[in-house]
Image (cartoon, rainbow, N blue to C red; front, top):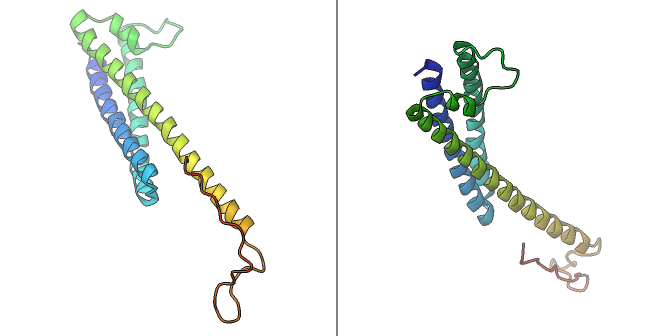
Length: 169
């Protein structure tokens, strides 16, 4: 088997591991969002952001390996971009099956990560909207005359209507 293919298997395995970590972190972030544990969410986001440069490096490495494969196999005359599928089709059946499975596994975990990220974004936006509603209700409910009387007790005469909480958010 060619060196680029062997190296590509290593890259795909490592990339899959990184995406599995991303997925795990996104699951943890979902729990933090639901519990409204913003410090945990921040910590998980920082941990997650450390993975992005590593994934980017692997993507670049994979592109270089594909170019190397292209040169070794004399595929420079192809006008289209060489993909993993093209490499798999040019290999023997046993080797290609393993590489193809790695590629499919990577694509599947990437799809799962994308789906949970979208779901978490919806949860975060819903929470933000909920807090904005609360804040606007608090701002609207406050009046200049509200406060304390001369005895230091809360002035009940100037109180405004209570704030309704949206319990479906």
